[in-house]
Image (tube, rainbow, N blue to C red):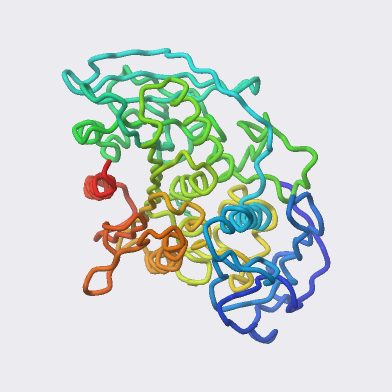
Amino acid sequence: MYRFGFGLMWVVGTFGCGGSDGASDAAPSDAPSDSSSDAHEDAGVADGGSPLGPYPPVTDLPARDALPDLFMSFDGTRRASDVSEWEAWRQDELRDLFAFYQYGYAPSDEVPVTVEVVVSEPDFIPDQVRYDELAVRLGDLGLVVHVALFTPHGVDSPPVFVAPNRCGNQEVTEDPRVRATTAWQGDNCGSTVEESRGVRAYQWPISSIAEAGFAFATFHESEIDPDDEEHDFANGVHAALVDSARDPRIRWGRVAAWAWGVSRVIDGLLEHGTVDATRIAAVGHSRRGKTVLLAAAHDPRIALVIAHQSGTGGVALHRSLEGETLELINALFPSWFNDVFPTFARRELQTPVDQHQLIALVAPRAVLATDGSDDRWADPDGARAAVLAASPAWELYGAPGVVLDDAGAPTLDGPLAWHLRPGDHDLTDDDWATFLEFARRRGW
Ligand code: GCU
């Protein structure tokens, strides 16, 4: 991946991150020392192609304990005080800040999709589920995403859960009628593609989803972009769709590419026309939880999003300083974000946007964040805090946001919710029961 270097310098800036709810700047002496041998160099992208910038380099951003304000502009000069202002400029500013400092910009090219049904099994599960495989061709990029679509019998225009998967569509069932991926497979899938058949079937309870009246659509993330550090961006959509006008440091990372892929799959589903366009839910576990949250922040067609154990770069706050740190996530997965984001290693308090603001971008649509009590790496407390801090965005729309129970714990009753179940990092039947219950309470 392209790396860069600028002079190292610690400056507490007088600009940026305005309106942080009365927080005071941390003294320079509180800040991480730039002399630490592994401090990242300053991503001083002065005017690197942001439509709304230029923004200051990371090292010039002030450290603040308090969360960045949902509604105050980056320069601290104006506040979005109602929905029309929020939608007229603040949403765009937040999306732009997330792209510039964290996820990178997706190319703005229009990529129209075409859909071909390549497998049809009307009685995939007798008297219950129909199966279709949709080949969704992405413009003239030479890329095809194979969407495994399971629809319940007897339901016209069902709501749908759209989910990226790790190993390929064959991971969701032992049934060979669901064709195996031909794209790159990462670890934890099996040593051969066929060995990975059904390997995660327990995570995708197709029959229970159908019984609840929902369709389920899944696709292999590698068909958008293989999660392969070795080949970096030499394959997938990164190679096929390059924004050469944009500074390479702020081009899209892998999470942004996957999120873009979720939207292209939705294009394909709508083109196919079986599911209800007004009840599209996106669901993702872990890195795919980060992905669907980002997708929902950009794509208003996603009416409900479930970010399950999405952790750092997902629902969890940078400022919670628990679980996976920004330093670790960027060291372990250097392609997930843009090339500015690693500069925030040990500088969490300097992040000009935090994850409650990404959640807020989905308002007033439905958001559920779920966690496991033993999954400390994903930082359940930081996720809960982010959800609570995002709630005023729903209130701006006159909606309740998070609804608390008598003990002050978030419930599934509001359009914004956080739920903790016992246990570790996995996607279980209990999680699906929660997802379905949340959708049911939204009237789906
Ligand atoms: C790693 C990574 C997490 C990620 C997870 C996953 O644990 O550090 O950020 O969420 O993988 O996707 O399974």
